[in-house]
Length: 124
Image 1 (cartoon, helix red, strand yellow):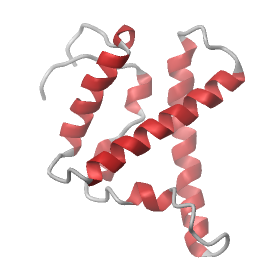
Image 2 (tube, helix red, strand yellow):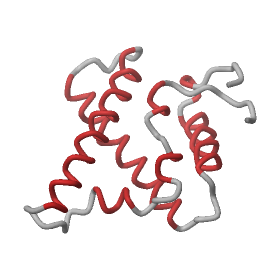
Image 3 (cartoon, helix red, strand yellow):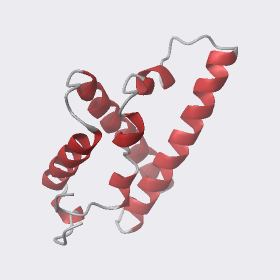
Image 4 (cartoon, one colour):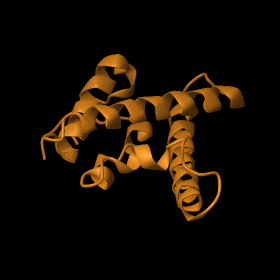
């Protein structure tokens, strides 16, 4: 594996490998047009709950070392994070030639440019 910047725990929440063969699943889990009841809704809700929990944990770890300590800051940052992940997954759907490792590396490069203070100088 190539060396590169080590990103904060927030980036570890983005697990492109879990979606590699099922990149459309993210959109299905967060589909607002699913029926309000029934097995599809229940399955999507269970996945959303776990993904939201993982995201909130990652964001909390990220914010732990920052000055953003208010609960609403964490909630806002979690929404920003999911918007970012959703945009990355949507982009990936348009670029199916990209592997999970490609997406992880691309995400880390872009995140390091946008938030250089979170990237460590050590190789992975």
